Length: 88
Image (cartoon, rainbow, N blue to C red; front, side, top):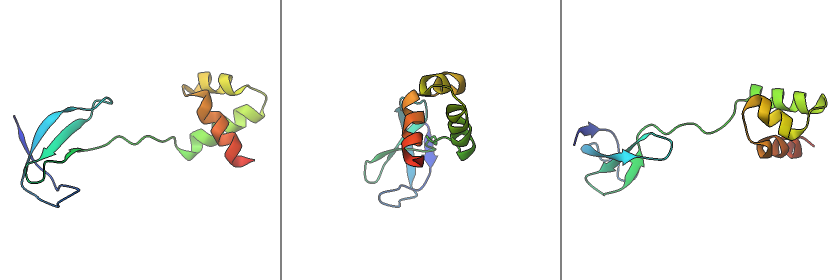
């Protein structure tokens, strides 16, 4: 196993960490050798940009359905409907 030096989010230890597989999104999981906590080294950001949100709302208010907007932009229709609820 390859050793990695990174600060632990729980105990703050800078000792070597061990790789412990990957999570569902494919990012590397790390285990702290001091406290035993497992964490993601570089987590992926899971949110859409403000530009994408505004574009989705603009398309929706232009006459497309929430499902249609989701298909065009490659996202869930639930995202579009949640953004509409927040703006009204």
